Image (cartoon, rainbow over the protein chains, first blue to last red):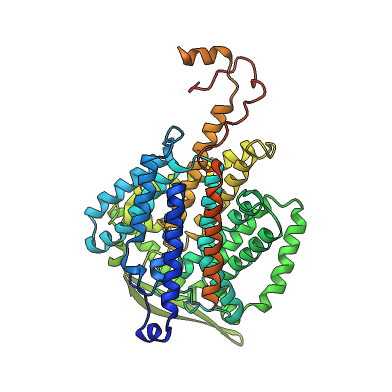
Length: 468
Length: 50
């Protein structure tokens, strides 16, 4: 990956780039070293690289080395050679992911824009394939915990930067500097807003249930400071999607609030206090959620969605990745001005072309057609349902009898629902971070199934039957 | 400055996780769950993989 640094930035940074690069390389080598002792750490290393892309933070040393490829090869190799595979199960949702992977591969060969489609395919297949692989490695509670910690901490590397800069400068749409300026991966403002809100339930879970860092004042301090930073990300990036995600999470939290009226009252009071403190550019931008008819970005979305629906009717199997590039949109913007007693409606017509989908649901429909959309909905919908089943099954267990499974299932479900709400307005159907969540859910499901089977009471006859 | 603080903090914590995993044998193998105390209901069939 090419770093986005101007020559003056490179020159002005003096010796620091070298130190910076050496530290990142040292970090990766340390992970690799531990990996040879504990092979699961290779999986964690890949998760880290996938989220943080250290090669993009690097000035010159790392960006010529395929670190991602090295770690994934080590992770899969170590699993294949030394890991215990008796406990690995292949779940129905892994089959669905595999089906989606194959289907996307086929549509890529038939795509309307072969070059662009091949470009997107080059990272989508990795995200899907890793989500299929990941559950096979998740065999112990500690593996779930360390995976959760790595997901949260690697996202935190970006979120803490964004949170502090928002407090210091107030941020701004497209102007909050999250270390990397090329606006891809987790560094893109709408994506980091969605992910930052989605991981809040996971942070709360880890604060209470992880055994790597048992709960104490330091863990609490870090967890709540990080949650605060997460909540600041939608404000700093001024991505409206983030605000919608916060709303979704607050509604979900109602389910667990012991005193619901008090909870709603505190929320309303907090909102009243917070709104005057928000930067005015933020409140102005959020106001456009109401006046979407006068807002080009929102009108474009509606126009793109209408276009996609018509396109899908003609191309039920989709147009392959990036099929949106052929759209040509014509939008009417209405601005209502009130002048005394008269109300003027001013209509302006604008045109646009090759607008992205701005919604994962329409992204799936336009690119992969109805079969792709159905597969995608099944993968995500089943995840939410399965986590609900696990939550109900385990929530009342004693703490030493796998109660954590219920808590983790609930956290993963909430994260997933926040993502599905955010995905309504952003094209992030294949966001690799989300597929880590999906992989973790599948792993938790098969893990719980296996533990339950191992613990089940067996009559003597049953044991004999299996022996014969 | 802010960037380096965030990178140092999060990367330091990830290293600490990795370091602690070295000493945790339950990363790769954990004890079997305690068997359920009693059968749930009469005539319950044993699990399929029993």
